[in-house]
Length: 481
Ligand code: ACM
Ligand code: ZN
Image 1 (tube, protein in one colour):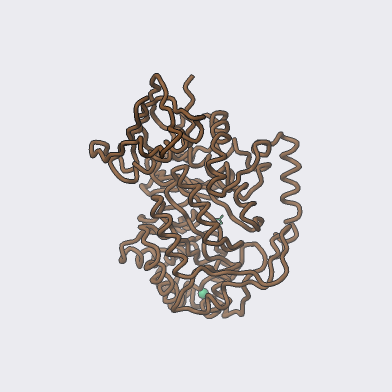
Image 2 (cartoon, helix red, strand yellow; image 1 turned 120 degrees about the horizontal axis):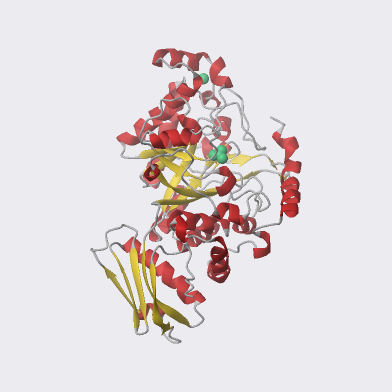
């Protein structure tokens, strides 16, 4: 049987007889004929033809050539000196295949992020969703709003339930560093989608600019996890001036067509009691605070659109019923079928369900096989084409080191990469696990060390114990706000 040691598994391949012997001297690339072939129309498609006397890699775009090169790199690394001949014709199912890193709860250096980017590129992911602002910190230098760097970037201590760190913790990427990451990603055909989370998850900014809240503050950068009541005021014009100042600098750094503007977990208690927010609702004819959030997001979406950009929002933002149709909705926790309704109404959805794609949760809760079995089309969707892609996330409340992030992310990020690329009937969990083990040295060579295989799919009792050990220490801090 022909074993194709590639992740993601190619969508079409034809085994051929014979082997290509990997030369002991010289570089493999010298035996590869690479060519742009405009008859290959998919922007991400490639053809890789391995014959005993040479290798041909063709694609309609440089991106396609890059993906073909990743496949070849994997075959060469796992081939024990020779590659079985094969003809691969490949292109992805989904055009949006993302990974997200939360650099707020814990800060990762540019060098560490580059390793994660190299790893994602190996598996043909094409979007780095960069979570840069939240209650517990602000990580983007904004020259027009210097207090974000001086005040919002640092919290007094860290107490995330199970993770306690005394003393100040922080960090803020300079604009030069942000551009360095954008350039590094671009060389690997990865687009950086930065996230400015609003109107909730903004306490760090409110610590510096309390006048943007409904009550006026004062606030401190949060030292705990949670969902916090104080959010940006939707009634004050100064809020929008602030957001547009920040976004203007972000757009100059991040050329991506899409900007993620958050919209998750924004409690409405302050808006209900705020005269400015209530006046806004009357003036705009909005019947409730969910619709006020729709208005809020729509103003930012309109501002972005005037500048040629589109927005991605988390799924809570559709609840007001008035979200601009151009927004892409990212599903993370949808108990009400709101993403299916959005897709059925013609809107686009990114699938990153909490129970499958959140790789900060222990393997006891989210075993590799559960992540791998993810079906991105939510129940009730009639037009699967509106499901635009998939995303794996790593939130970092409980992840304090790069080594820990690596083993929580991998192999689960690679599983999501395969879900995003490979047709469902060609996927197989046992085959994926076998291939991932063979490819672990390639991943290690870029500096990312995955979880050991015995941790991937714990037995039921081990799972129960692992879930209890993970959640019990966190209960007191979850109840504290
Ligand atoms: C989220 O996990 N709050 C998007
Ligand atoms: Zn208000």
